[in-house]
Length: 213
Image 1 (cartoon, rainbow, N blue to C red):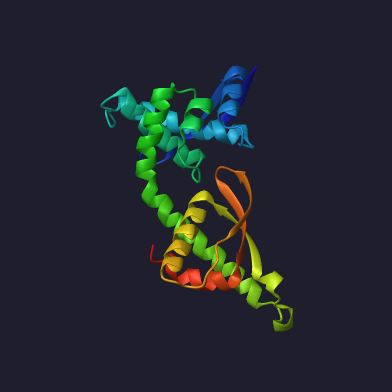
Image 2: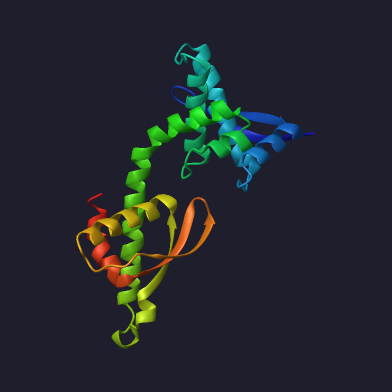
């Protein structure tokens, strides 16, 4: 029995719609590779579009890879951008989910992380600033008589990169003898996120420093 979905390939001046049929085995393979995906048809359509475009570009002479490693790196980068735009490249995903050999998984993840670092750093700065601004705004909406020390402690869920930036800012401020405390980590729901409490007064001190990173 085949699972069907519709993919789209780009033509020069228009679009051509095609239907892609996948066996149960291949659908199961997609679900193992992307267990967080809620809609396997959308996932399959996205990947089918990527791969169809790649193969047509190969036949048309528009794209050539200098090695198999180069091809894998470019394909994985396209896959992440289309399906996992907010996830960092990790050895564990490539090895456990995508079934690359250990050496290839480590090499591909390392190369792509180096490409990704600048973009993710900028995204983390923006994300941390926005979260601080929202918490400060929410706190200042509280009537003054209710602005107790307990309510100054705000709970935030940060990405691992945002958390690293916050610690970097606090370290710099402490080195300048600024009276500021460190965040208190309450949980780590996964490798990608940190849940913590942080004083809103300290957010106000740290916020101008984040943009300087």
